[in-house]
Length: 349
Image (tube, rainbow, N blue to C red):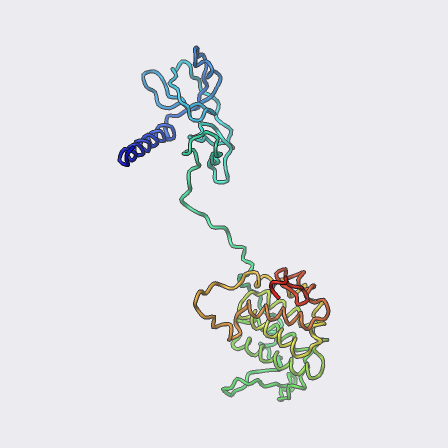
């Protein structure tokens, strides 16, 4: 057989297949579910079975029998009677010529390979795709700081922005208004309030004053050796800043956490009972991963504005200063973390 003859045969088979599809799978507005009865001879095996009756021609109707792989017969009207409708949870599969349970998209299931059913009995593809809903785990939230904003508005906050262009802070006594040295400020009282002010996005310069003031008070508390005792009051404010999910606020909170860990090594041990408050939110940012930048350069990394890099650095510092078996405790809340004591495969040493 030459190539031209083979091509003609393939084209003929394709035309026949298209004709069969139109004949057996095309919709017909006059189709009805009927029951066959009263037949004799070799068609007597069809009695009692159901099918889908199509158009009428010469006193007969073409009936596609159910469960017979699309077989159709011309049957007289006198041998057909209307059948009850199919159950609502089923749908008619034209290719398989049978009622089947509906799939997830209200269409019949695909045919099983090797079942002998026509290949065109697959469910009708849907053109409109519905995207899955967003969980919103990392979307920004609205949680304004009540205590910081009240102190900022009534002037009881012991820090204010200086008049010079350098952005230096001025510390003063809230009762007398006289300027004081920052070493005289009560860090136990005002450090949690300033850390809470990281979430302030409405006050002009409020977040800046809160961050700079918190950094200076951390230095004051570190010199006095008060940081470990301040951890229980600082952690709720840090957790609220992380739970805000605003990337700039999360970056400021993580940088402040790193400053606390490096300012006094005892802070790492004091943070161990509070892992359950800080690590779940940090784990959510870590699981999101870095976006693919291809050949571009991440400028936010050296500017300390990359959340994922700061989370990894903060977790490593918490393990380093957290004492014995801190990595195992962290792994309970951050499953993707690998502690430093874990032995690697010999091929990765």
